[in-house]
Image (cartoon, rainbow over all chains, first blue to last red; front, side):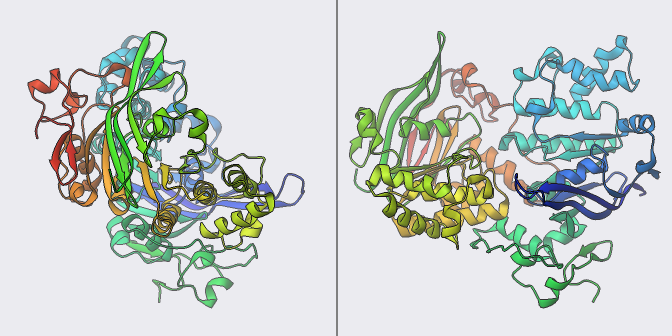
Amino acid sequence: MDTLLSVLELKKTYEVKKSIFSSKKEVIRAVDSISFELQRGSTLGIVGESGSGKSTLARCILFLERPDGGKVFFENKDLTILKKNEMRALRKDMQIIFQDPYSSLNPRKRVLETIGEPLLFHGYSKKGDLISRVKDILKDTGLNEDFLNKYPHEMSGGQRQRVAIGRTIATNPKLIIADEPVSSLDVSIQAQIVNLFLDIKEKRKISMIFVSHDLNIVRFISDEIIVLYKGKIVESGKTEEVFYNPLHPYTKMLIESVKANFIRKEPVLNDDHYEGCAYYQRCNVKKEICRKKPPSLTGDKIHKVACFVNDRSV
Amino acid sequence: MEGYIIEISNLYTSFFIDTQVIPVINELNLAIKKGKVFGLIGESGSGKTMTALSILRLIPSPGKITGGKIYFEGKDLLSLTNREMESIRGKRIGMVFQEPMTALNPVIRVGEQISETLIIHKNLSKKEAKDVSLELLKKVGFEDPGKRYIQYPHQLSGGQRQRVLIAIAISCNPSLLIVDEPTTALDVATEAQILSLLKELIETQNMSMLFITHNLNIMKRFGDHIGIMYAGRLLETAPVGDFFNEPLHPYSRGLIDSIFTLRTEEKRLKVIPGFVPKLSELPAGCKFHPRCSYVMDICKKDEPHMKDLGNGRWIRCYLF
């Protein structure tokens, strides 16, 4: 296997005013020096709670949002130095699926136009054979040709998400980033869409980054996972390894809170600043050193963790 | 009947749009035992929230309750006047809505929103209401109620807002608490905290609860009795333990499979084929039959009624 995507020290910060009337600004590090590699044909799951930077990371990888620092290599091409038209040509190889199929589809376009647009734009199809191409794609997403002339409001959430997936795979991309693609769907439909992802991945050999807060689904679909907390990777590794043997207290807490009726009072968070681990205030196994400096991500290819308590390098 | 806090029998609710009648609740029978949690499970549009709104008589126009009885503490809620209903809503029956982001008034301090309920329902003075509100904030897990009392909703996180809503809902010591998807908008960790809080409240406040969710996992660890809704109907009700040991209705089985095969070594998830039907375009017969793998001829023609299987289990299916 070879590397399709490598992300090096990616950073994205936002400045937020502390209150509407103050001129003081607070810097939020949404993506804080994140590095990882994605092998061709494999699926990487990114988990974390809301505000952990999952979506920002996904958008930065595709340069939908310009990162402040770091590099992204896609098939050994450095995306940070690409020109606009080179980047546009590359877009057909990297696609994204958003969470909410109600807002990600243009309400005034029929399915045929929605899926046909990228085909025409990237030159995969001419006007003449467009319909048959779109029909093929619809078939792959489990919809029949009756859908060609439907508008988004005539379809259910699951059907819309299938159309969104259809548009994504139309250009035969090498990488799909799916940002919470099933969390707005009903339970019985979620399973259908997860299966669809697996079918597509197998049939078309597409690599995938699957962003979700649902640990069960990430576990089912991913080969490797990354756990994000406040913009940093706190743990990463082979999926089963991380689930069977979680090392970071945050990962443990996430897994526990899915499994059991986990009783735990919200910790009192104070605003005083310290340099150490971002998880320090919520951690239940913290040591003195955790307050003083941030831990770095250590370990091997199978399993990495950023925690002084469970340091893999010692 | 003794031992039940609320009993709903043969409830029908419909929406009247132009000349169309769209039934959203059909032949719903449900009873909640005192001090117990009844979990109402269903996908979007299955009628869960409409059931809650029917109990509170808050069905928005053009919807109407068209039949049935709702006995709560010995009174039929559907025969009360609006004035009488107002003294039950918020006082005897508390409600926590799904969206903690929108359920609070953004320009009023959260403490005052709790006090408001107390002033209206319990005739407390402003000062007394504030004292009680501070107590309530403490009860729902805030360590610094004084500071929280004067904050605005936007200064709180999603989980904290949900706590405030719970504080409002329990402020008048209701005997029934209705919670509608209370954790759907929250993270797993925050979800666990809110669930613990609700559990604690049931145990200490002697409350019963109608817990509406689409998440079977939550009900597995939380509920006492469970009801599965589909297209405005209950398809199965059962004690939680029995239900998860042996779900009977094909739809229930499908739901459980599509969640719990996640743990196995299967290559694909088991799925229920097809789509959730629109309420305006329901099939004849059993509403689940187009997606059912055990479908028989009769299922396509006549809709089954709820059948008593004993031990608190009821099912709407010809297979039983």
